[in-house]
Length: 95
Image (cartoon, rainbow, N blue to C red; front, top):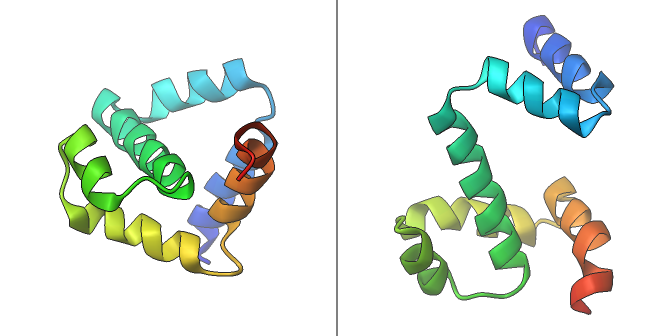
């Protein structure tokens, strides 16, 4: 990991307050970049919940290629995204 990327990760990691994180995102990211991150998160949640990829693509108006990446990530046993989704949603969704 290069030094600049590591520095940015440390900044994000040190930001523990949701309001501060929102402000950081608003200042650093354009509205379209924030929208892209939100789309990625939402499709990961939908995949995790077992929604079919074609249904997700239709719902968000995106290609299956964009969804395939998320699907591959969630299939990895050591996926941190899968761990986050499991920790956050399994109690609520009873998956």
